[in-house]
Amino acid sequence: MNVNELDIAYDYLKNVTKEQASFQHIWAYVVEKSGMSIEESESRVSKFFTNFMLDGRFVTIGENIWDLRERQTFDKVHIDMKDVYNDVDTFDEDSEEEEEEYESIFAEKEESDEEGEEERDEDEEDSEESDSEFEDELDFNI
Image (tube, rainbow, N blue to C red; front, side, top):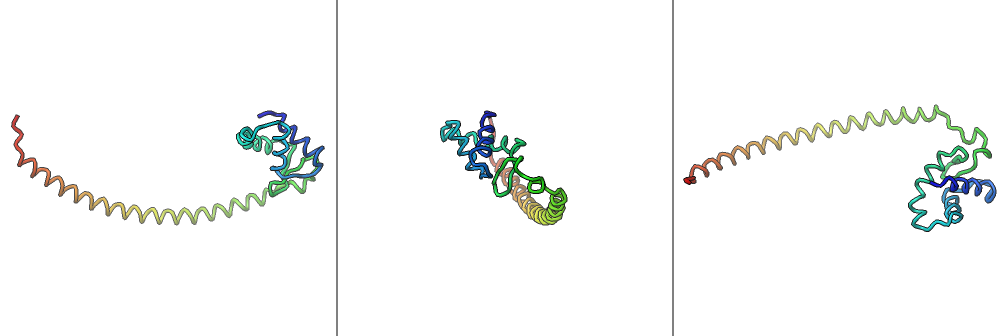
């Protein structure tokens, strides 16, 4: 990853658009200014996006719209951790219900598999008996 690409993105938001922009527009500008081919841009976009997200100069406004952190107030970009933890609690309850449902389905499948094994064991015993009868009929004189 060329750090210069992040600087190009910063320049785009700071001096070119002078306002927030979608990631697609930012990336298109970076590709153009860097002189990347289509193949290069396709292979580098995910790494750029990761570094872009981690760079403290940029902040998402939502819906994949980005701006410079220096232009945004704390209230606009702050995530209330109470909301995050409430989502986790809800997820845990849903997760427990799904786990119980999965366990009941799995138990039914195990019962079905055990019944099938018993049938296969009986078939194998019958097959072994017929094999020994066949071997008795053969004469293995060497």
